[in-house]
Length: 363
Image (cartoon, rainbow, N blue to C red; front, side, top):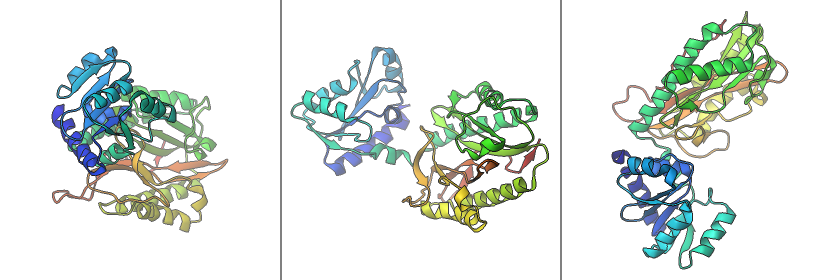
């Protein structure tokens, strides 16, 4: 879809002009996909500050590259980084910006040694910064991923019963997402029952479900875009502490979502939710940030947490996911994916993409 990717490359070329770079060597596979459309396990992209780019990949992806990036030059090679650096040298692109966070010291040394006459300068996370604000095509893919996620949860919940294992439930959620068109799970599905609910990233195991609280954190990937949703529900009559903690987490999430508007400071958004939890005496039990960006990766900028910097902007998808984790007892987390909106036509300052009820479900 050249009409989507070409404007992204133009925005990066503006960054290169500001850096005084002749070209950028993009080696992050996610960023290559963002700029060209090609998803592969071996690719790199050379983007001059002016003019069309050059995509390099090996023969396994040659036909896909020609299909997905018809408006860029294609080189079929296994040595994608070095061959693109050689191309830059041959074309007089002597100041080559590279992704310092992605290229290892060893790879950088090989590029410098193998490309005399080329000066390598830091590009940093310039592409990731461009990816923070999504275009409407990206938001549509993310919305579809979230719709699949919500529908899968609604299908699976009626079948949850004592005796199922955490792993059984995780697999059922993943099957339901696949049946609805998901490419794959967005990340390793989390099902945490009873005391395991106090472990935010618990790995589902053979523990059988029994009366108590149950945390599920999962999402579908669709078109490369990652959904993220967490629901906590009770199997059997919930204890008083479960109702109290759930109500507190639900209030904190509402406060966080209300604060998530264009122009809001990310630390302040985190603080809006965290303050409620701290005031209730559970500050030490909320052990992670309030949320993060989502897109071609499950965790993207911006990160909303204590000490984080930056502001939210129009068309930035984020999660809002406060939690309280009581060691040896259990936990509660409620998470939704939403899009911050600031345009004049937006009826509300945010668009909620995960639609499953956030009421405490008692099964």
